[in-house]
Length: 371
Image (cartoon, rainbow, N blue to C red; front, side, top):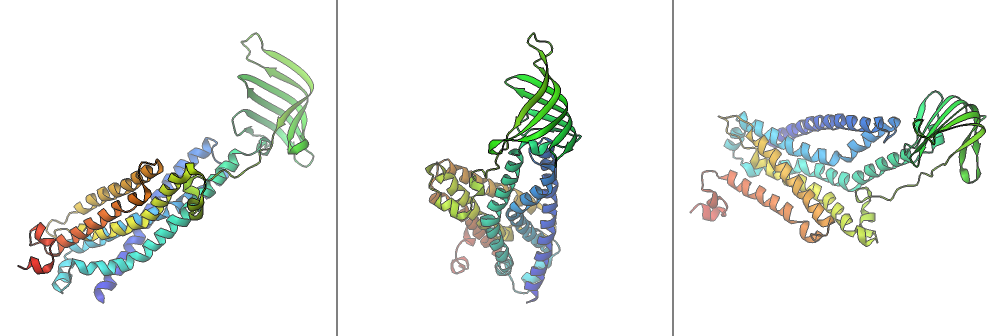
């Protein structure tokens, strides 16, 4: 049917365009945020691109939900504005005729949204956390680089080595500053070497140097000369951190035996399952919401669309928080928001089907409305 083909074609192009715009905005925001983390030493600058890609992939379900909602609105608003809907209505179609082709286009995307929310979202969060944790758990010796000042993970030590021979384990012109128990200790030496100890521990041994301990303005300030000075560098094993609820798979959320995490796990599962239902509810609401008087030609529907999305999304997040805190039962909190959204969509569609009747008569079946 020509009507279905035209609608499907415009929805495809518009959804793709809106999605690309949202992804661009998302990537720009993530670049600014993650580069800020890298500048502060929270993440490795070399991992910035990977973290940006993982974060974008994790939010793909939300971006698709918004893209689908906005695309349906844009297409139908333009049809109303350009009087194309009048032509279709004059051909015997109604607002209800839009539901089937739009759902036929939207349902595959809703399935993709569900898969992204259930599987891709926790995987992306988990990988991002592992990358960040492994960088923060890095050993001090892995940070030593010739000609660069390097700070330890906990900002307790600063190293500078002018020359480094990794094969021989020799270093030259070493500067090591350590802040421990409120006292600053600075050691300098012309030569040294890296020593491997028992249990995988590593140390830097400084030869024929000088050590400054304390503050110069304090009476306990000391200057010591040494023939050999050893500063230990402990290799921290990069253990995988315990996953948070947003990083757990579906099986982990359902089978976690810890009673302290039951409510947060159920809340996370509630949000993941609720996202595709929200996408479907927004699509149904967009059909009657897109009505525009061709003589006015305004885009007031977009304002209401933003408001509806914010309310729907915040209610879903609020319900998730209530379930996580144990203030609401997950089975009672799972359906009211979505049922309310579908009910609003039904009432709005009924109102648009026969606008000549009073609003309360539009809710009655056609048999009673004709009397």
